[in-house]
Amino acid sequence: MSPEGLIMKWVFNCIYGAAGAMLLPYWLWKLPRARRYRAGIWERLGHSPRLPAGQKRLWIHCASVGEASVPRRLVARLETLRPEWEIVFSTNTDTGAERLRHLYPGSVVFYMPLDFSFCVEKALERTRPDVVLLVELEVWPGFMEACRARRVPVGIINGRIGERSRRMLGALRRFRSSLWDAVSICCARSPDDAAGFESAGMPAERIHCCGSLKYDALKLEVDSERKRYLARLFNLVSEAPVIVAGSTHEGEEVILASAYRDLKIRHRDLRLIVAPRHVERASAVVSALEARGFSVLRKTTLQSTHQSAPEDSIIVLDTIGELSICYSLATIAFVGRSLAPPGGGQNMMEPAALGKPVLVGPLTGNFRPEMELLEKSQAVVTVRGRAELARQADRLLDHPEQVRRLGEAARGVILRSQGATECVLEHVGRLLDN
Image (tube, rainbow, N blue to C red; front, side, top):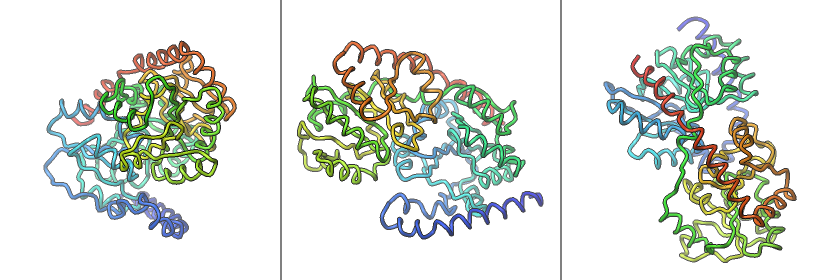
């Protein structure tokens, strides 16, 4: 390693160490209280599964639940076309690990190491990858430097870069000129993202605008048997309207429930299903809603007691991997992390693919390309608070033809946007060949 590389390694280890020391009291306080802080500690320190040498191996990193399904179609194509390659997965979260094991049964799944040099070097030594793919944007300096030193090529797929990340990575590259050296290809999800990566210092010849893999991974239909089961469990009457609020964050559930209370005055048979983005928040969500006088039931409680939900209760989905099935039950879908600060948005294309009218709040900056596509086709409704949410939902519930039109327009956006997998497969294939 060059003297510059050794100095940078030392500098970043010191920065991470100082940050870790400041966060240690908080981490020790959370450790016994939240499973996600305990999960995978040993692997985060670099003790990834020890995998045998002599096997071609592709490591795909999916930061969390939202990224886990993104490469699903790509993985299926690689397993068909490149059966000699073993594909392993890493993630940062316990829910991400659970989702990866569900989506890719039989595959090795482990936690991404902390970015200390000794952690990432040990993880690479134990897993022995020939190629690494990062889904969207998970560029950590220590990991990138370790891959570069070991001559392990890195690819970014479904590349996404916001303005803040662009500025940060651009500044980091000026501080550490070798930041992008390990990256052989970057398959960006949109022209804006491609331009953002170039602005952050990535060489233009490595950047390819392929479109979003998320569209190819979206479900256009769901398991009908599972759908009927949830409808029975939630006691959903066939003609009764249902609002499904998916990927909600702190502060949004109370806003949604308040709008629901307003809507119940005119739509007495209306039901509300709330799916928190992080299932460990389910207890807090239930407590917050019950404190405001709502009847609330968790999905796992209904399962364990073998009872049907009362028709006046709000359902809280506290399981992983069933949001799309719940969206399929919706008359109207609301997608969270968009009403309450800091916002940023969540995947509004999931209900769109199922032909559901989509409502979101105004804070969707992390999903600007998706919003532009939906807005161009008039396939999304943006609401700015409880009153407007109730008003727009009331309008749709009174006009089923508008519900149908919005749903058809949303589904049409998805169908026209699919096809990124083959473009990404072409560039990843060359990376594997080389």
